[in-house]
Amino acid sequence: MTKDATEQFLDSLPELKPGETFRFACHPGVPCFNACCGDLNLMLTPYDALRLRWGLGGLPSRLFVEKLAEVSARADGFPTMRLRMDDGGKKPCPFVRPEGCSIYADRPGACRTYPLGRATRSDMDGTLREQFFVVREPHCRGFEQEGEWTAESWLKDQGLEPYNAANDRYMRLVSDWRAAGRGLDSRRAGMVFLALYQPDDFQRFLRDMKMFERLEAEPGREERVLADEEAALDFGLDWLRLTLLGQTVNLRPRGA
Image 1: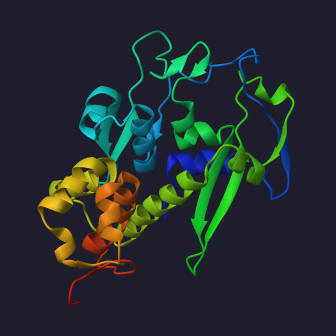
Image 2: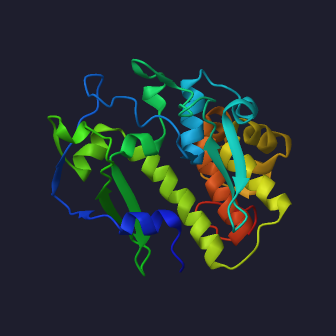
Image 3: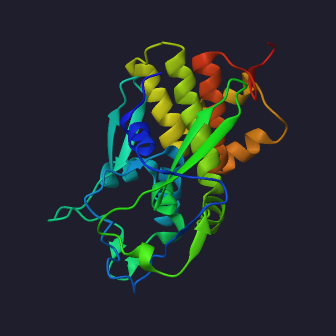
Protein backbone atom coordinates (compact mmCIF):
# COMPACT_ATOMS: atom_id res chain seq x y z
CA MET A 1 0.00 0.00 0.00
CA THR A 2 1.32 3.43 -0.89
CA LYS A 3 2.10 5.51 2.18
CA ASP A 4 0.50 8.91 2.52
CA ALA A 5 2.39 12.06 3.51
CA THR A 6 1.59 11.67 7.22
CA GLU A 7 2.94 8.11 7.35
CA GLN A 8 6.09 9.16 5.49
CA PHE A 9 6.62 12.06 7.90
CA LEU A 10 6.19 9.87 10.99
CA ASP A 11 8.49 7.21 9.60
CA SER A 12 11.19 9.88 9.22
CA LEU A 13 11.18 10.51 12.99
CA PRO A 14 12.83 8.40 15.71
CA GLU A 15 10.33 6.03 17.28
CA LEU A 16 9.49 6.33 20.98
CA LYS A 17 9.77 2.76 22.21
CA PRO A 18 7.42 1.27 24.85
CA GLY A 19 8.54 2.47 28.29
CA GLU A 20 10.87 5.10 26.84
CA THR A 21 10.32 8.58 28.25
CA PHE A 22 10.36 12.14 26.94
CA ARG A 23 10.32 15.47 28.75
CA PHE A 24 7.61 18.02 27.97
CA ALA A 25 5.15 20.52 29.40
CA CYS A 26 3.00 23.27 27.89
CA HIS A 27 1.56 26.10 30.01
CA PRO A 28 1.39 29.92 29.97
CA GLY A 29 4.84 30.14 31.54
CA VAL A 30 6.54 28.53 28.54
CA PRO A 31 8.07 31.24 26.28
CA CYS A 32 6.51 29.81 23.11
CA PHE A 33 3.01 29.37 24.60
CA ASN A 34 0.34 29.50 21.84
CA ALA A 35 2.99 29.64 19.09
CA CYS A 36 1.85 26.26 17.72
CA CYS A 37 -1.81 27.36 17.54
CA GLY A 38 -1.68 29.11 14.20
CA ASP A 39 -1.13 28.57 10.49
CA LEU A 40 -2.26 24.96 10.89
CA ASN A 41 -3.53 22.40 8.45
CA LEU A 42 -5.64 20.82 11.18
CA MET A 43 -7.67 17.92 9.87
CA LEU A 44 -10.73 17.02 11.92
CA THR A 45 -11.92 13.47 12.34
CA PRO A 46 -15.64 12.86 12.88
CA TYR A 47 -15.09 12.53 16.63
CA ASP A 48 -13.04 15.75 16.68
CA ALA A 49 -15.91 17.61 15.01
CA LEU A 50 -18.43 16.17 17.45
CA ARG A 51 -16.41 17.20 20.49
CA LEU A 52 -15.76 20.68 19.12
CA ARG A 53 -19.50 21.14 18.68
CA TRP A 54 -19.98 20.05 22.30
CA GLY A 55 -17.44 22.66 23.37
CA LEU A 56 -19.43 25.27 21.45
CA GLY A 57 -22.61 24.51 23.37
CA GLY A 58 -24.02 21.94 20.97
CA LEU A 59 -23.64 24.01 17.80
CA PRO A 60 -25.66 22.33 15.00
CA SER A 61 -23.43 20.50 12.56
CA ARG A 62 -24.62 22.55 9.58
CA LEU A 63 -23.62 25.79 11.31
CA PHE A 64 -20.30 24.28 12.36
CA VAL A 65 -19.52 23.41 8.74
CA GLU A 66 -20.64 26.82 7.53
CA LYS A 67 -18.71 28.87 10.08
CA LEU A 68 -15.68 26.84 11.11
CA ALA A 69 -14.86 24.07 8.65
CA GLU A 70 -13.56 23.47 5.16
CA VAL A 71 -14.75 20.30 3.47
CA SER A 72 -12.98 18.49 0.65
CA ALA A 73 -12.49 14.91 -0.52
CA ARG A 74 -9.66 12.39 -0.32
CA ALA A 75 -8.38 10.70 -3.45
CA ASP A 76 -10.54 7.69 -2.53
CA GLY A 77 -13.64 9.90 -2.44
CA PHE A 78 -14.10 9.99 1.34
CA PRO A 79 -15.05 13.47 2.55
CA THR A 80 -12.58 15.22 4.84
CA MET A 81 -12.86 18.24 7.09
CA ARG A 82 -10.32 20.72 8.33
CA LEU A 83 -10.61 23.56 10.82
CA ARG A 84 -10.84 26.97 9.19
CA MET A 85 -8.16 29.29 10.54
CA ASP A 86 -8.88 32.96 11.23
CA ASP A 87 -7.62 35.64 8.86
CA GLY A 88 -4.42 37.31 9.96
CA GLY A 89 -0.67 37.13 9.63
CA LYS A 90 -0.22 33.72 11.23
CA LYS A 91 -3.78 32.50 10.60
CA PRO A 92 -4.51 31.78 14.26
CA CYS A 93 -6.81 29.00 15.41
CA PRO A 94 -10.27 30.48 16.01
CA PHE A 95 -10.25 29.10 19.55
CA VAL A 96 -6.88 30.37 20.76
CA ARG A 97 -6.81 33.18 23.33
CA PRO A 98 -3.88 34.85 25.13
CA GLU A 99 -4.60 32.64 28.14
CA GLY A 100 -4.79 29.49 26.00
CA CYS A 101 -7.40 27.33 24.27
CA SER A 102 -11.01 28.44 24.83
CA ILE A 103 -12.38 24.94 24.13
CA TYR A 104 -9.56 23.06 25.86
CA ALA A 105 -11.77 20.31 27.32
CA ASP A 106 -12.99 19.43 23.82
CA ARG A 107 -9.88 20.21 21.75
CA PRO A 108 -9.10 17.93 18.77
CA GLY A 109 -7.13 14.73 19.09
CA ALA A 110 -4.11 16.11 17.22
CA CYS A 111 -3.82 18.95 19.76
CA ARG A 112 -4.03 16.46 22.62
CA THR A 113 -1.44 14.09 21.14
CA TYR A 114 1.20 16.77 20.46
CA PRO A 115 4.21 16.59 20.83
CA LEU A 116 3.74 12.94 19.95
CA GLY A 117 2.86 11.56 16.56
CA ARG A 118 0.86 8.34 16.53
CA ALA A 119 0.73 5.80 13.72
CA THR A 120 -1.33 2.61 13.62
CA ARG A 121 -0.92 -0.48 11.51
CA SER A 122 -2.98 -3.66 11.34
CA ASP A 123 -1.32 -7.06 11.58
CA MET A 124 -2.44 -9.91 9.34
CA ASP A 125 -4.86 -11.05 12.06
CA GLY A 126 -6.39 -7.57 12.31
CA THR A 127 -4.63 -6.62 15.56
CA LEU A 128 -3.96 -2.88 15.68
CA ARG A 129 -0.36 -1.92 16.46
CA GLU A 130 0.57 1.55 17.69
CA GLN A 131 3.81 3.43 17.11
CA PHE A 132 4.73 6.76 18.67
CA PHE A 133 7.17 9.42 17.60
CA VAL A 134 8.32 12.63 19.29
CA VAL A 135 7.80 15.67 17.06
CA ARG A 136 10.48 18.22 18.01
CA GLU A 137 9.80 21.53 16.28
CA PRO A 138 12.56 24.21 16.45
CA HIS A 139 10.34 26.83 18.08
CA CYS A 140 9.00 24.57 20.86
CA ARG A 141 10.40 25.26 24.34
CA GLY A 142 8.15 22.72 26.01
CA PHE A 143 10.95 20.15 25.94
CA GLU A 144 12.92 22.34 28.36
CA GLN A 145 10.20 22.12 31.04
CA GLU A 146 9.68 19.76 33.95
CA GLY A 147 7.56 16.69 33.32
CA GLU A 148 8.55 13.21 32.18
CA TRP A 149 6.20 10.98 30.23
CA THR A 150 5.90 7.70 28.42
CA ALA A 151 3.58 7.52 25.43
CA GLU A 152 1.08 5.61 27.57
CA SER A 153 1.07 8.11 30.44
CA TRP A 154 0.83 11.08 28.05
CA LEU A 155 -2.19 9.65 26.23
CA LYS A 156 -3.92 8.93 29.53
CA ASP A 157 -3.18 12.40 30.90
CA GLN A 158 -4.52 14.04 27.74
CA GLY A 159 -7.76 12.04 27.70
CA LEU A 160 -7.12 10.43 24.33
CA GLU A 161 -8.81 7.06 24.83
CA PRO A 162 -12.23 7.98 23.32
CA TYR A 163 -10.57 9.94 20.52
CA ASN A 164 -8.26 7.11 19.49
CA ALA A 165 -11.00 4.49 19.77
CA ALA A 166 -13.37 6.42 17.48
CA ASN A 167 -10.65 7.58 15.11
CA ASP A 168 -9.20 4.09 14.71
CA ARG A 169 -12.62 2.72 13.75
CA TYR A 170 -13.03 5.51 11.22
CA MET A 171 -9.60 4.98 9.66
CA ARG A 172 -10.15 1.21 9.48
CA LEU A 173 -13.37 1.82 7.56
CA VAL A 174 -11.52 4.09 5.12
CA SER A 175 -8.67 1.57 4.80
CA ASP A 176 -11.03 -1.35 4.14
CA TRP A 177 -12.95 0.66 1.55
CA ARG A 178 -9.69 1.60 -0.17
CA ALA A 179 -8.54 -2.04 -0.10
CA ALA A 180 -11.80 -3.04 -1.78
CA GLY A 181 -10.76 -0.89 -4.73
CA ARG A 182 -14.11 0.79 -5.14
CA GLY A 183 -14.92 4.38 -5.97
CA LEU A 184 -17.10 6.59 -3.83
CA ASP A 185 -19.61 8.48 -5.97
CA SER A 186 -21.18 11.76 -4.87
CA ARG A 187 -24.32 10.08 -3.49
CA ARG A 188 -22.34 7.73 -1.29
CA ALA A 189 -19.94 10.49 -0.29
CA GLY A 190 -22.92 12.53 0.89
CA MET A 191 -24.15 9.53 2.86
CA VAL A 192 -20.72 9.16 4.51
CA PHE A 193 -20.61 12.85 5.41
CA LEU A 194 -24.09 12.70 6.92
CA ALA A 195 -23.35 9.64 9.05
CA LEU A 196 -19.94 10.79 10.27
CA TYR A 197 -19.88 14.58 10.38
CA GLN A 198 -23.55 15.45 10.89
CA PRO A 199 -24.79 13.09 13.62
CA ASP A 200 -27.64 15.46 14.56
CA ASP A 201 -28.99 15.37 10.99
CA PHE A 202 -28.22 11.64 10.81
CA GLN A 203 -30.47 11.06 13.82
CA ARG A 204 -33.33 12.80 11.99
CA PHE A 205 -32.60 10.74 8.88
CA LEU A 206 -32.75 7.50 10.85
CA ARG A 207 -35.99 8.53 12.49
CA ASP A 208 -37.68 9.80 9.32
CA MET A 209 -36.64 6.77 7.26
CA LYS A 210 -37.67 4.37 10.05
CA MET A 211 -34.25 2.78 9.62
CA PHE A 212 -34.43 0.64 12.74
CA GLU A 213 -37.48 -1.14 11.33
CA ARG A 214 -35.18 -2.47 8.61
CA LEU A 215 -32.22 -3.41 10.80
CA GLU A 216 -31.46 -5.82 13.61
CA ALA A 217 -29.55 -4.12 16.41
CA GLU A 218 -28.89 -4.96 20.04
CA PRO A 219 -31.71 -4.13 22.46
CA GLY A 220 -31.76 -0.48 23.50
CA ARG A 221 -29.46 0.70 20.74
CA GLU A 222 -32.17 2.57 18.85
CA GLU A 223 -33.02 4.63 21.92
CA ARG A 224 -29.36 5.44 22.60
CA VAL A 225 -28.66 6.39 18.99
CA LEU A 226 -31.63 8.71 18.68
CA ALA A 227 -30.91 10.38 22.02
CA ASP A 228 -27.12 10.75 21.97
CA GLU A 229 -24.93 12.01 19.10
CA GLU A 230 -21.88 10.05 20.21
CA ALA A 231 -23.98 6.88 20.02
CA ALA A 232 -25.22 8.06 16.60
CA LEU A 233 -21.64 8.39 15.36
CA ASP A 234 -20.83 4.92 16.68
CA PHE A 235 -23.89 3.58 14.88
CA GLY A 236 -22.97 5.49 11.73
CA LEU A 237 -19.64 3.66 11.52
CA ASP A 238 -21.43 0.30 11.73
CA TRP A 239 -24.11 1.42 9.27
CA LEU A 240 -21.52 2.54 6.71
CA ARG A 241 -19.61 -0.72 7.06
CA LEU A 242 -22.85 -2.58 6.34
CA THR A 243 -23.96 -0.26 3.54
CA LEU A 244 -20.63 0.16 1.78
CA LEU A 245 -18.91 -3.16 2.43
CA GLY A 246 -21.76 -5.51 3.25
CA GLN A 247 -20.16 -6.42 6.58
CA THR A 248 -22.57 -7.31 9.40
CA VAL A 249 -20.38 -7.47 12.50
CA ASN A 250 -22.56 -5.30 14.74
CA LEU A 251 -25.55 -4.70 12.50
CA ARG A 252 -27.54 -6.67 9.95
CA PRO A 253 -30.61 -6.23 7.76
CA ARG A 254 -33.77 -7.46 9.48
CA GLY A 255 -34.57 -11.01 8.44
CA ALA A 256 -31.10 -11.66 6.97
